[in-house]
Image (cartoon, rainbow, N blue to C red; front, side, top):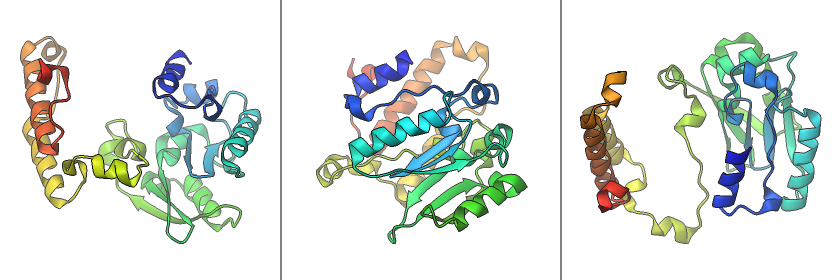
Length: 234
């Protein structure tokens, strides 16, 4: 709770737009180490497991009231019952770690790992969500993300949504925008610098620090960021 409060404070988030809700002990025991393993939202739509929060329905009611007050809009809760999808299934398939995106026609699409389609209970739940006219989720895109999943990260670890004004977009270095050329350069950088294994002994080796700094220095040059790390400014 203290860490979350510090994040909100340091990012100058308006108090009326911040909620600190405890995850349920059952979810934590099942392997829910982040809230994005048990819920995902986009705009006014919140796809959430019924056992996500310690206070259950009361937490959702708190979210509803705060959202309506701040946004003048009623949120849509897409609640996944434990009787349909267990906490174990939610964690194993990373259903709630999926990406929920808005489409030009006002509908939404769920971009999910293939484990969601391979698990019959989760697949059936998704089909019901897509067919339910009470929510705008209409499309499903399945992707093979096993390489990331096997390293402890699902779809949420592969994306970060940042809303920018036109002025903010224009102020960004051109190198941070992904295209085929930048993707190729980043892939070459990864292959050059990423070790395929680390041992405890490596972590005590000063050479690893120097190696990491060289990699970061090259990365900031590749992206046109300039000197942003303390070791670059020394």
